[in-house]
Amino acid sequence: ATAQIGVTGLAVMGRNLARNFARSGCTVALHNRTEARTRDLVDAFGHEGTFVPTRSPEEFVAALQPPRCLVVMVKAGGPTDAVIEQFAQLVEVGDVIVDGGNAHFEDTRRREAALRERGVHFVGTGISGGEEGALLGPSIMPGGSAEAYRSLGPLLERIAARAPDGAPCTTHLGTDGAGHFVKMVHNGIEYADMQLIAEAYDLLRGVAGLEPAEIAEVFRRWNTGRLDSYLIEITAEVLTHTDARTGRPFVDVVADRAEQKGTGRWTVQTALDLGVPVPGIAQAVFARSQSGHARLRRAAESLPGPETAEGAPSRMAADEAERFAAQVEQCLYASKVVSYAQGWDMLRAGSEAYDWGIDLGSVAAIWRAGCIIRAAFLDRIRGAFTERPALPTLLADPQFAQELGEAQDAWRGTVAAAARHGVPAPGMSGALAYYDGLRAARLPAALTQAQRDYFGAHTYRRDDLEGTFHTQWGGDRTEDRTD
Ligand code: NDP
Image (cartoon, rainbow, N blue to C red; front, side, top):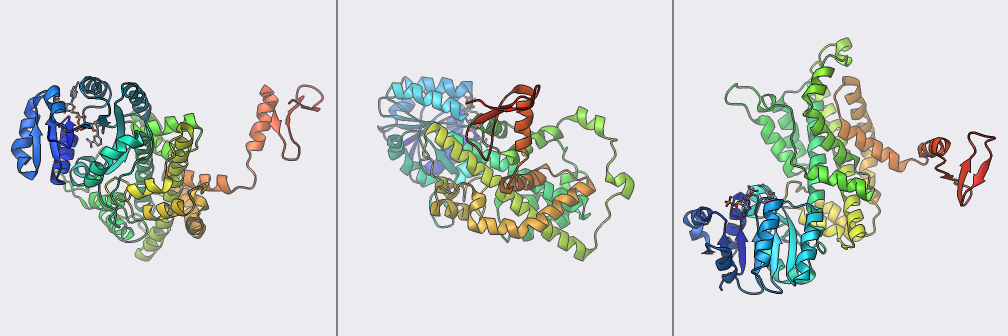
């Protein structure tokens, strides 16, 4: 046995992870159900490092130095369960089985509990950054026991992306499903961020009348400021691209129906169960779903909008467009801060509900590179939660609070412009409503409680007295204390 780590499942993700481990100096055992993939990897990339190709699960396990660390990178769901069970029978007490696929954290909790009973460590880990990240350095989000991390962690730290300060983008996040939970929230935030960027583009087009290539320039400029991020960078790239078949802007030939693989939906479902308001993520999931509802969209096609009265959007003069773009930047930034604040609320709620003890600053730290939402401003989120781990919401951080205050006129103006021009901006307007909802001295929730008491005797509390109360709505309207 010579290998420090093994990878089974050598499709795009597994192959690139195995190569990344080998390039970092590890001896890597390889296994795949269909042996040809193993041979192909060694033929094409064998020169990159030391690989130990194996032909059977038994041979694979025998190639690994104890305590064995083996990474499963097979199709999520049933195949992952089958492969874990197969290897659980072959490994020994103290060995570590890692699932690097996109598993639901509840599945990871179930798998971890089952393996723990057999003395085997199970580590569910999120891996972000897609195919390229797996090869060049992903952000890695491992859960599982602290003991498992002692043997596995140093190997993960070798292949993870490096943040600008040189720190590896991985850390032990908490026991059992913590890693996959954090990865799920990462994807939820990614949905929200993408939706906001799409709305900014739509506003620059629908209100300012800019062409995609001009909007790409705006995004490029934004990418040199506080919005500096991978998603803004690729948006500029996409908007500059011209379709080779038609010569039209690429964004104009892609069907406007956004699909989803399910992690955004998981985030919202889990948020509902935990009782955490994440409207930014929910709006993004629903916006994708709405875009795909051809029947609804066709039926509503001829509903009147503002353009029927005012004509098609006209092109703004250059200086006016410039001012509007600056306003949209403020709105995008403020809405983005709100979405990230909601993501961190969710991390805290999950950590408390499952007793994971997730370090909220560390999550920001390991998302600074390697993952899809990597962005300069994550370093500031890291700072905010490192300085004040009990910060109740990112919006309460003095720096972010000040920025939102400064952005609010532009933010309100942009949301109003969207409404006036009939440009749908659920993410931006929802973010503003969330901001106003949190800062409101008094909410109409009081009226909601009164209604609930009226029709269902659900009772209410008063601000001026202890206890719960019910008003005799059907009778003389006297108030009874019910507790
Ligand atoms: P796929 O999800 O396409 O899975 C293909 C691999 O699974 C092949 O190695 C295949 O083996 C193996 N496999 C499928 N069924 C079985 C089975 N019953 N028994 C044994 N092996 C099986 O591969 P990807 O590389 O795209 O993804 C791997 C994992 O990583 C998935 O869980 C995915 O969700 C996750 N992931 C993917 C990302 C991406 O960008 N693609 C990003 C982050 C995570 P065979 O060659 O024999 O068919």
